[in-house]
Length: 226
Image 1 (tube, one colour):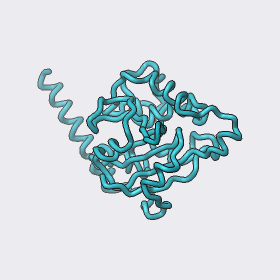
Image 2 (tube, one colour; image 1 turned 30 degrees about the vertical axis):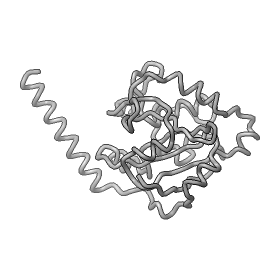
Image 3 (tube, rainbow, N blue to C red; image 1 turned 180 degrees about the vertical axis):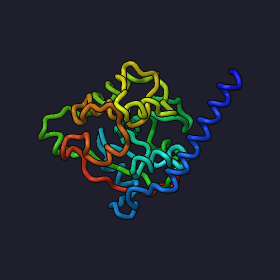
Image 4 (cartoon, rainbow, N blue to C red; image 1 turned 90 degrees about the horizontal axis):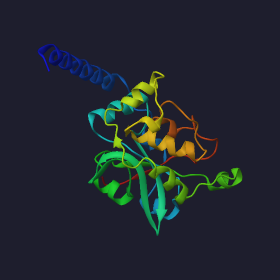
């Protein structure tokens, strides 16, 4: 790398840091956690179903940047499945003592090792609506779709998200790295409950922008000791 390339990289980094601080200063959180209904963790374990959505809020600078830019309450999303009374999260992430990228890990480990807010969001699937629509949503089908992306990396820079925002998104099959909501969006689209998008953010799964109407109930908040 010559000195001009180095100067360009330093300048780009400074611009990014300036914009990040600007956004963090001027942008506000979407809505206070207190406005949501709250449940305890045991209620989640007792009532969870395959296909429920789970949300986390990280505390790193990049995660807070995403949260504020998008006006979302959370910056990470995954899908729950249940196996022998245990809950597992299907997600694309890095860390928590597991390999990076698309993966499936026990929910208790996610909660134990995740660094972020003491609050997580839980959005249960509406079983009555699922049955009424005749949708085939179960653990085996979710795993079949999810596992097709195992072995890919985690898009830590979220480059595909940025390109998707400006209409330059590419097919997931051509990508080596996936970010969390992109992975979840792919699974939900294959399940027939989410529209196909150039990019997905955690925010659109908090709302019903891309989801079939009524397929998910309102978000509940759970306080955990992260």
